[in-house]
Image (cartoon, rainbow, N blue to C red):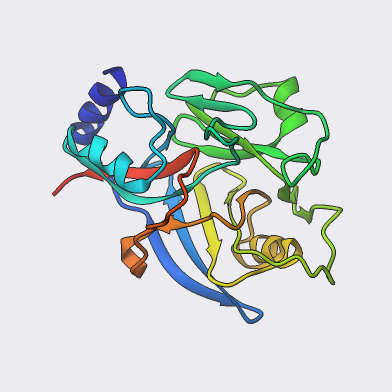
Length: 245
Protein backbone atom coordinates (compact mmCIF):
# COMPACT_ATOMS: atom_id res chain seq x y z
CA UNK A 1 0.00 0.00 0.00
CA UNK A 2 2.86 2.38 0.81
CA UNK A 3 4.34 1.89 -2.65
CA UNK A 4 1.06 2.81 -4.33
CA UNK A 5 0.46 5.81 -2.10
CA UNK A 6 3.92 7.14 -2.90
CA UNK A 7 3.34 6.63 -6.61
CA UNK A 8 0.02 8.46 -6.32
CA UNK A 9 1.64 11.42 -4.64
CA UNK A 10 4.49 11.54 -7.15
CA UNK A 11 2.03 11.69 -10.02
CA UNK A 12 0.59 14.88 -8.57
CA UNK A 13 3.89 16.33 -7.39
CA UNK A 14 5.49 16.26 -10.84
CA UNK A 15 4.51 14.87 -14.26
CA UNK A 16 6.21 11.57 -15.02
CA UNK A 17 7.74 10.99 -18.44
CA UNK A 18 7.90 7.78 -20.46
CA UNK A 19 11.03 5.86 -21.41
CA UNK A 20 12.42 6.65 -24.85
CA UNK A 21 12.90 3.52 -26.96
CA UNK A 22 14.49 3.18 -30.39
CA UNK A 23 15.92 0.69 -32.86
CA UNK A 24 19.70 0.90 -33.30
CA UNK A 25 22.27 -1.05 -35.33
CA UNK A 26 25.98 -1.61 -34.75
CA UNK A 27 28.35 -3.82 -36.74
CA UNK A 28 25.60 -5.84 -38.45
CA UNK A 29 23.71 -6.41 -35.17
CA UNK A 30 20.35 -4.87 -34.34
CA UNK A 31 19.16 -3.73 -30.93
CA UNK A 32 16.24 -2.11 -29.15
CA UNK A 33 17.48 0.52 -26.71
CA UNK A 34 15.35 2.22 -24.06
CA UNK A 35 16.80 5.19 -22.18
CA UNK A 36 15.41 6.03 -18.75
CA UNK A 37 16.00 9.39 -17.07
CA UNK A 38 15.93 8.67 -13.34
CA UNK A 39 15.27 12.32 -12.51
CA UNK A 40 11.92 12.33 -14.32
CA UNK A 41 10.86 8.68 -14.60
CA UNK A 42 9.50 6.15 -12.12
CA UNK A 43 11.64 3.02 -12.54
CA UNK A 44 10.75 -0.06 -10.48
CA UNK A 45 11.43 -3.79 -10.15
CA UNK A 46 8.59 -6.32 -10.00
CA UNK A 47 8.62 -9.95 -8.89
CA UNK A 48 5.39 -10.95 -7.11
CA UNK A 49 1.82 -9.69 -7.19
CA UNK A 50 -0.33 -8.78 -4.18
CA UNK A 51 -1.20 -12.45 -3.60
CA UNK A 52 2.46 -13.53 -3.46
CA UNK A 53 2.49 -15.20 -6.88
CA UNK A 54 5.30 -14.42 -9.31
CA UNK A 55 4.14 -12.03 -12.05
CA UNK A 56 6.04 -13.84 -14.78
CA UNK A 57 4.62 -11.71 -17.59
CA UNK A 58 4.51 -8.01 -18.44
CA UNK A 59 0.72 -8.30 -18.78
CA UNK A 60 0.46 -9.37 -15.13
CA UNK A 61 2.41 -6.31 -13.99
CA UNK A 62 0.21 -4.10 -16.15
CA UNK A 63 -2.96 -5.65 -14.73
CA UNK A 64 -1.89 -4.90 -11.18
CA UNK A 65 -0.77 -1.37 -12.04
CA UNK A 66 -4.12 -0.71 -13.70
CA UNK A 67 -5.83 -1.06 -10.33
CA UNK A 68 -3.92 2.04 -9.20
CA UNK A 69 -4.43 4.08 -12.36
CA UNK A 70 -0.97 3.28 -13.72
CA UNK A 71 0.63 1.34 -16.55
CA UNK A 72 4.01 0.30 -17.88
CA UNK A 73 5.75 2.55 -20.36
CA UNK A 74 8.58 0.08 -20.92
CA UNK A 75 9.69 -3.21 -19.32
CA UNK A 76 12.14 -6.09 -19.70
CA UNK A 77 13.34 -9.11 -17.76
CA UNK A 78 15.88 -8.04 -15.13
CA UNK A 79 18.01 -10.88 -13.85
CA UNK A 80 18.44 -14.63 -13.61
CA UNK A 81 16.17 -16.91 -11.65
CA UNK A 82 15.68 -20.49 -10.46
CA UNK A 83 13.00 -22.86 -11.78
CA UNK A 84 10.47 -21.41 -9.32
CA UNK A 85 11.34 -17.93 -10.68
CA UNK A 86 13.08 -16.91 -7.42
CA UNK A 87 16.05 -14.57 -8.07
CA UNK A 88 19.46 -16.25 -8.16
CA UNK A 89 21.26 -13.40 -6.41
CA UNK A 90 20.47 -10.20 -4.54
CA UNK A 91 16.95 -8.94 -5.07
CA UNK A 92 15.47 -5.91 -3.32
CA UNK A 93 11.99 -4.53 -4.03
CA UNK A 94 10.57 -1.39 -2.48
CA UNK A 95 13.17 -1.63 0.29
CA UNK A 96 12.48 -5.28 1.16
CA UNK A 97 15.11 -7.96 0.48
CA UNK A 98 13.93 -11.14 -1.23
CA UNK A 99 17.35 -12.75 -1.76
CA UNK A 100 20.88 -12.15 -0.43
CA UNK A 101 23.91 -11.15 -2.49
CA UNK A 102 26.19 -13.90 -3.84
CA UNK A 103 29.87 -13.03 -4.35
CA UNK A 104 31.40 -16.48 -4.94
CA UNK A 105 32.31 -17.84 -8.36
CA UNK A 106 29.94 -20.45 -9.71
CA UNK A 107 28.57 -22.17 -12.81
CA UNK A 108 26.89 -20.47 -15.73
CA UNK A 109 26.85 -16.86 -16.76
CA UNK A 110 25.85 -15.62 -13.30
CA UNK A 111 28.99 -17.10 -11.76
CA UNK A 112 31.31 -15.70 -14.44
CA UNK A 113 32.92 -13.14 -12.14
CA UNK A 114 32.90 -10.25 -11.95
CA UNK A 115 29.13 -10.06 -11.89
CA UNK A 116 27.16 -7.07 -10.64
CA UNK A 117 24.13 -5.42 -9.10
CA UNK A 118 21.71 -3.02 -10.72
CA UNK A 119 20.70 -0.56 -7.99
CA UNK A 120 17.83 1.94 -8.24
CA UNK A 121 18.07 4.68 -5.64
CA UNK A 122 16.68 8.18 -5.17
CA UNK A 123 16.60 9.72 -8.67
CA UNK A 124 19.60 7.65 -9.79
CA UNK A 125 20.57 4.15 -10.85
CA UNK A 126 23.94 2.42 -10.85
CA UNK A 127 25.53 -0.81 -12.04
CA UNK A 128 28.03 -1.86 -9.39
CA UNK A 129 30.41 -4.84 -9.32
CA UNK A 130 28.99 -7.31 -6.78
CA UNK A 131 31.98 -7.62 -4.44
CA UNK A 132 32.36 -3.86 -4.37
CA UNK A 133 28.65 -3.58 -3.62
CA UNK A 134 28.91 -6.12 -0.77
CA UNK A 135 31.76 -4.23 0.90
CA UNK A 136 29.92 -0.91 0.88
CA UNK A 137 26.22 -1.31 0.03
CA UNK A 138 24.67 1.90 -1.30
CA UNK A 139 21.12 3.04 -0.60
CA UNK A 140 18.90 1.11 -3.01
CA UNK A 141 15.12 1.08 -3.12
CA UNK A 142 15.34 -1.69 -5.71
CA UNK A 143 18.23 -3.97 -6.66
CA UNK A 144 18.79 -7.00 -8.88
CA UNK A 145 22.00 -9.02 -9.14
CA UNK A 146 22.99 -10.70 -12.37
CA UNK A 147 26.08 -11.53 -14.36
CA UNK A 148 28.44 -11.26 -15.90
CA UNK A 149 29.31 -7.58 -15.98
CA UNK A 150 29.50 -6.41 -19.60
CA UNK A 151 31.54 -3.27 -18.99
CA UNK A 152 33.61 -2.55 -15.87
CA UNK A 153 34.92 1.00 -15.46
CA UNK A 154 35.03 1.44 -19.22
CA UNK A 155 36.60 -1.96 -20.02
CA UNK A 156 35.03 -5.16 -21.33
CA UNK A 157 34.75 -8.18 -19.06
CA UNK A 158 38.22 -9.83 -19.22
CA UNK A 159 36.83 -13.23 -20.23
CA UNK A 160 34.90 -12.07 -23.29
CA UNK A 161 36.39 -13.59 -26.47
CA UNK A 162 36.29 -11.67 -29.75
CA UNK A 163 36.06 -14.92 -31.73
CA UNK A 164 33.43 -16.59 -29.52
CA UNK A 165 30.83 -18.74 -31.28
CA UNK A 166 28.30 -18.56 -28.41
CA UNK A 167 25.49 -16.45 -29.81
CA UNK A 168 22.13 -15.72 -28.14
CA UNK A 169 19.52 -13.02 -27.86
CA UNK A 170 20.87 -11.00 -24.92
CA UNK A 171 19.66 -8.10 -22.80
CA UNK A 172 21.16 -5.88 -20.12
CA UNK A 173 21.50 -2.44 -18.58
CA UNK A 174 24.19 0.21 -18.39
CA UNK A 175 24.28 3.40 -16.34
CA UNK A 176 25.85 6.80 -16.84
CA UNK A 177 28.66 8.00 -14.58
CA UNK A 178 26.35 10.48 -12.84
CA UNK A 179 23.67 7.84 -12.29
CA UNK A 180 21.05 9.94 -14.02
CA UNK A 181 20.49 7.68 -17.03
CA UNK A 182 19.96 3.94 -17.38
CA UNK A 183 20.26 2.43 -20.87
CA UNK A 184 18.41 -0.87 -21.35
CA UNK A 185 19.19 -2.86 -24.48
CA UNK A 186 18.14 -6.16 -26.05
CA UNK A 187 19.52 -7.62 -29.25
CA UNK A 188 17.15 -8.31 -32.13
CA UNK A 189 19.45 -11.04 -33.42
CA UNK A 190 21.84 -13.40 -31.66
CA UNK A 191 25.07 -11.79 -30.44
CA UNK A 192 28.20 -12.79 -28.52
CA UNK A 193 29.11 -11.35 -25.14
CA UNK A 194 31.98 -9.48 -26.80
CA UNK A 195 29.64 -7.88 -29.34
CA UNK A 196 27.06 -6.96 -26.72
CA UNK A 197 29.62 -5.53 -24.31
CA UNK A 198 31.24 -3.56 -27.15
CA UNK A 199 27.86 -2.05 -28.01
CA UNK A 200 27.53 -0.76 -24.46
CA UNK A 201 31.13 0.46 -24.27
CA UNK A 202 31.55 1.98 -27.73
CA UNK A 203 28.03 3.10 -28.70
CA UNK A 204 25.98 3.62 -25.54
CA UNK A 205 29.18 4.69 -23.73
CA UNK A 206 28.12 3.56 -20.27
CA UNK A 207 31.15 3.11 -17.96
CA UNK A 208 29.46 0.13 -16.30
CA UNK A 209 26.97 -2.33 -17.77
CA UNK A 210 25.41 -5.60 -16.65
CA UNK A 211 24.09 -8.64 -18.50
CA UNK A 212 20.56 -9.62 -17.46
CA UNK A 213 19.86 -12.83 -19.39
CA UNK A 214 19.93 -14.59 -22.74
CA UNK A 215 17.61 -16.88 -24.64
CA UNK A 216 14.43 -16.03 -22.68
CA UNK A 217 14.98 -12.26 -22.92
CA UNK A 218 12.25 -9.98 -24.19
CA UNK A 219 11.15 -6.36 -24.00
CA UNK A 220 7.85 -4.52 -23.71
CA UNK A 221 8.39 -1.38 -25.78
CA UNK A 222 5.21 -0.15 -27.53
CA UNK A 223 7.16 2.74 -29.08
CA UNK A 224 8.95 0.28 -31.38
CA UNK A 225 6.09 -2.20 -31.72
CA UNK A 226 7.38 -4.75 -29.22
CA UNK A 227 4.67 -6.36 -27.06
CA UNK A 228 7.06 -8.59 -25.12
CA UNK A 229 4.67 -11.53 -25.36
CA UNK A 230 6.29 -14.92 -24.73
CA UNK A 231 5.52 -18.40 -23.49
CA UNK A 232 8.20 -18.65 -20.81
CA UNK A 233 7.45 -17.16 -17.42
CA UNK A 234 10.00 -14.56 -16.30
CA UNK A 235 11.52 -13.85 -12.90
CA UNK A 236 12.43 -10.26 -11.96
CA UNK A 237 11.03 -7.57 -14.27
CA UNK A 238 12.16 -3.95 -14.52
CA UNK A 239 9.97 -1.20 -15.95
CA UNK A 240 9.00 2.43 -15.94
CA UNK A 241 5.55 3.38 -14.65
CA UNK A 242 3.35 6.23 -15.89
CA UNK A 243 -0.24 7.27 -15.18
CA UNK A 244 -2.78 5.35 -17.23
CA UNK A 245 -4.61 7.38 -19.84
